[in-house]
Length: 545
Image 1 (cartoon, helix red, strand yellow):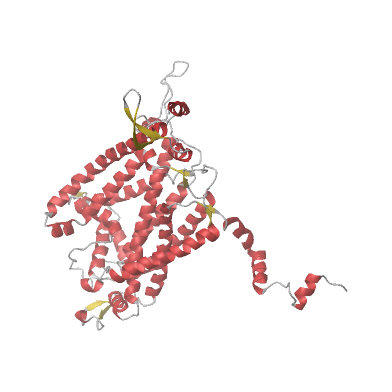
Image 2 (tube, rainbow, N blue to C red):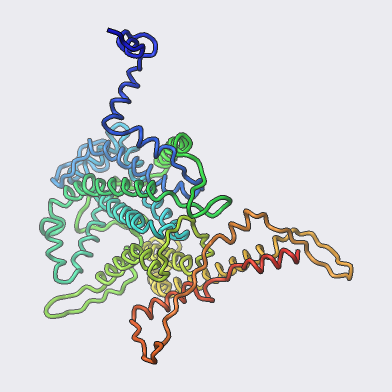
């Protein structure tokens, strides 16, 4: 019986026999198809731009939150049972407090690296929400949410919303006086909901506030339910990024049908690994030198006390500001009291969130565009969208100021009533002013780009013509720069059909069609964009030069 050389080497162990690692890889590939999956994805091309790193910061801080949260969970007891403190922090000795507060003190003062882990966990949550906020604003400004990425926008929005909500529950867990004030704030917001508010409150708190179950319930949702949902959304978000391919800014060789950049493996994997440790190191440094949420300074929660200068984390400042600037209106209807001073801000907050979530679909409906977009807009080339986004930022900042009106009043020796009235007026006036200014700013930048394309850039060289006239010499832009300035689309506003048809019968135009035409005119009409230079104008300017 004869055997092949390969069979002999495999059976005798001579040179040429596959190594153990290769045999394991072949075994896994035969059952999971790893090789084909890796071959098609690890060499996937990704464009390179500094703003794309914002999404990576979101991912890395989320991972750090999970890792530090696991460590803290080993020592934290989510119980509201009352105990007497006898620990390392002597100012609170013999003080009655919940087990949740006591174990948080123990983590801070008795567990090795406990305080640093708490600090890193909290700072990571703050940076996580901030990075998601800036990342989504980048997507909004550049139009990266357009077809086919509307679903990914919703995933990102849900991650931002859940991150804010989970952060709120996270700093509520220690059951100190500051977090207890936040939980009381939540109770007031839920109670303001007509008809069902009381029932919802009794369900959430398990009885009359504060009850004995709110901390254990928040703990379960904080460490299990919401992180699980967010992890699934992160995976789905990344899958869609791979599937749709990454967006890119216009540039040489970049079109709607390709991606110019570097491969995922090994270039971006190496960059990602290094950047993760940069983010982790920066958070560790901040956590080591900048104190956040010193619960021992507030003391345990008591329902008859409120912390001076009680402030939530910055990402809840929007809702806090709405509550603080709203007059204390209430009405009595059919034997019920409607607390409009809380309910109206709650409705406004929800409506703003809904508007952010559905914006890609609204813009798609206005444009009527059916094609896919893979090249990003420069913000100046979408004046209305850029102005709306900036007006929203202005609204957010003014409400953040309203949410800290007491701190501003005490630190700058101002009247808190004057600050509150300023924020109330600015709430309606500032977004409008910002919208007008930013839109005109974008149009001015568009005119500048048009002049650059047609006349070149100013060189600063002055030349005297034979007849005595002095002119500044302009230099033609390179072709790649011309492409960057003219690669964007300029959509035409939608027009309604004629008022009468060919038979002279009056057409019936739906209200939605009229609204769509008006919004389209506002977005893409003559007052909202500067026409790009045509080929004829460019040819004429070239002959002139």
